[in-house]
Length: 329
Image 1: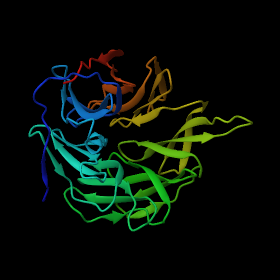
Image 2: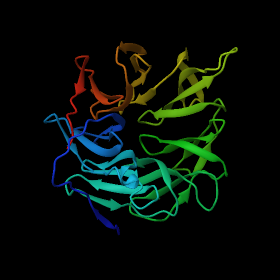
Image 3: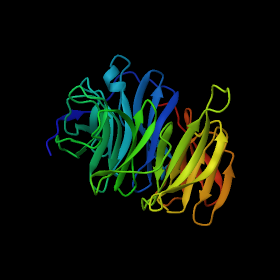
């Protein structure tokens, strides 16, 4: 692999502390002992790590109010327990970068001729999937191996595609066509699209079971004279080609995530979190305001983003913990 090495900026001189004002993205490390998250400090956007063992927070990048490119950071993905793949505009275009937490370095991950968005990474195959527009075409679902420049286009049609969601085992990737919100599923192993009977408008595939036998999708519909849609959440059985409704006719579903356990999944409303066991068909409710975004490796912890706070739900004792985020240097 040939990477161009970039040294992270380290601030010296007068110390300046800022308060985190918004958290946008968060994800457990593969071993479950760290949480990487992207946070705003006023107008500055950076990557931070919460260390579960010693209950501490470290700032891993240092941006500047004057450098818009450094501020742009999205799509956190762990490569391994010490490296993070994400998108940044370090060099003008939105491209992939690798942050090494131990070495405190950034390296470019290959190169692209256009902006890349909505990055997903499969650790098993060491492959990234993202949205980009090439050769004047509409935004497509593209893929390339870690450290390589060779690009493959998964979505062959010249439509505006968005919202890639790779399955936990790396066998499938879902995405949707805009502006209608028409869902697609592509078999990575067989290199072909899968034809399924799903609603062809306002549909988003949000999460996969670990064995890829099921996935969750949300569907929005307008009823009567209302200007606001009602949402429903479904489980789709890939082998049977059938779906079942988990919840319907609600105002908003903030998120839905499937754990690495085949049975446990969860979804967030505006004022509560619902834990559903798909094996024994039981439902449990938690009064948690926030968006559920990830599970720990052992499936005992659920991570929530609540505006400018991180919340952990411990399923072993049904307790919640607000992660303390002090003023950051």
